[in-house]
Length: 221
Image (cartoon, rainbow, N blue to C red; front, top):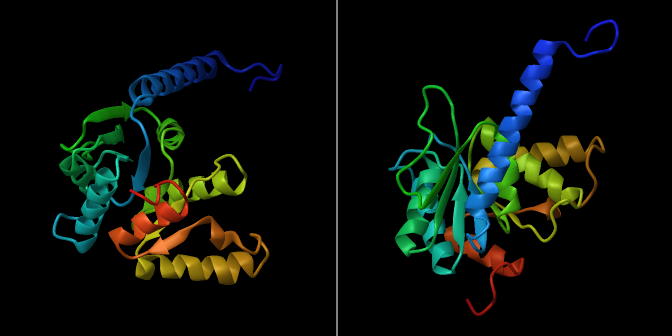
């Protein structure tokens, strides 16, 4: 900032551009997604290959949830995202991908009925969470952790209500849960009962059961 407290013109221009892009991202998303019906977000690594058991599991989750009348919304990329999109599309239900431009990376898969590309990660996260009833989280890296901890924070603070968060893969999540229990809870950085914010399952049927328990799916479906 200048000594008078004014923002330099170059910074003002950059901020105006970012605000404009943010509004464009969110407006396009609202127009495209408002009619998708009940949907579940699936988060997970882009690095999982087709032959990986976790790819097959994500495909099965997409297939089962599609059969229950749910659309699947992912980041639209390869790996877990592709598998879930592929599975739900195979079931005949709606497959949605919300991608982002990343240099030298594949940003979308071929199994999308609705596909959007965002300028910013934060607008993509807002758009995704606004249009889904819950989140299924597969193993992943920094991006997946960002998405996971964002929805955990939103649920914990009451910004998202009745929003189930389902982690898939006990072995993968065990270390994180141990750290949260021993370190975060042990040092009173989170409240007792924090682990009620999510459930952990190991198969596609477990995902369906968790959504039944959260009343996202009716018991008759």
